[in-house]
Amino acid sequence: MENTKELRTWLNDMDLGHPLVIAGPCSAETEEQVLRIAKDLKDTDVNYYRAGIWKPRTRPGMFEGVGAIGLKWLQKVKEETGLKTATEVANRAHVELALEHDIDLLWVGARSTVSPFIVQEIADALEGTDKIVLIKNPVNPDLALWLGAVERLHKADIKKLGVIHRGFSTYEKTKYRNIPEWQLAIELQTKFPDLPIINDPSHITGKRDMIFDVSQTALDLNFDGLMIETHHDPDNAWSDAAQQVTPESLVQIMKDLKIRKETDAEAEYNSKLSNLRAQIDIFDHQLIETLGKRMKVSDGIGVIKKQRNVAVLQSNRWNEILGKMILEGESKGLSEEFVLRMFKAIHQESINHQEKIIKS
Ligand code: PEP
Ligand code: MN
Image (cartoon, rainbow, N blue to C red; front, top):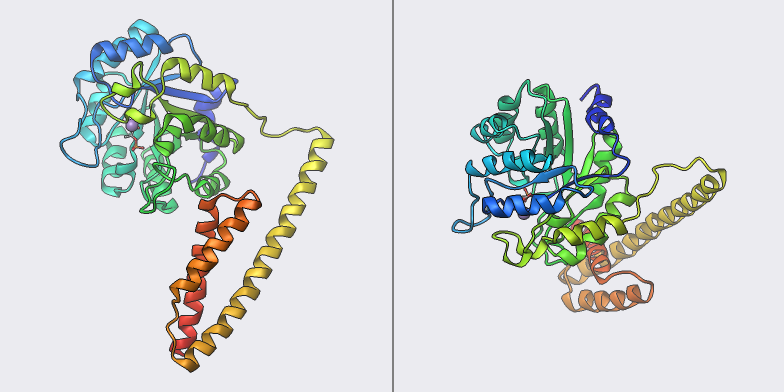
């Protein structure tokens, strides 16, 4: 992508002085519900009012959205509250209807970003419009697929672009609904620092009491904004009930969040920061050194196993290591989840090494 500098213009032009906020229900349910929540959000920091009209659901038989009628309700929101509107589009017909109803911001959902055919169809339908288009990350942690979608829209001459980080699905059980894999979002920011990036803590956490923490992490990582699902009666929402917050909670969350400055010219700050970064560099170097040494020892075990014709995978030994390390990790302030993930990766690398030896 070239000329990425201008990708940010739409956001800079808004001159917000705070992160961009997109809020509103997961789904539009009734006209009354859509208008009621919008009125509650009218005099807050919310910049765009979101509501899903067509809902991509994992399994059939769940509520799949009210359809085009919901767009009329969003038009009414704009008339009655002045809030700008946002919805998800997943095909050409959605785009055309959304444009007809003057929706201000369109987003491409995680289940659409995985499909270059769908993304291309959306890009073609949007060609030449000046709408803001935000692309959610694909459900699987694939940066190239995410970037590919951004590029398709960029090629269709969409100038007001951005991405939404909503986490990634995983087979493993974690405390998140979709694991954040922050390093992927950071890699994207490093590659395209001018591409606005919004965090969606609602779909990352799946639980309303974790939304504040994830939002704060996102702001600490210089994200440009937040998309937070908001409903006047979250427990009775027709979709994503557990993760929606009330308008009052949203206001409280926004108040409690610390908005950090991207840089601080103050000399003292700079010298402290470079000092801490230098320490990190040293520890990272040591980590690699130690892992390299550990793998050499593991190779030695592989040699013995080969001589004795013993299986590479020794489950008992592995469980013993895990149990010990989780306890040790805990005493150093490391979460069980992190220790598990790290040792699974180390163990896998060990197995790969030993397998190579045994097959040689
Ligand atoms: C949504 O925003 O309601 C939604 C369906 O999100 P995602 O595409 O991230 O699952
Ligand atoms: Mn949702």
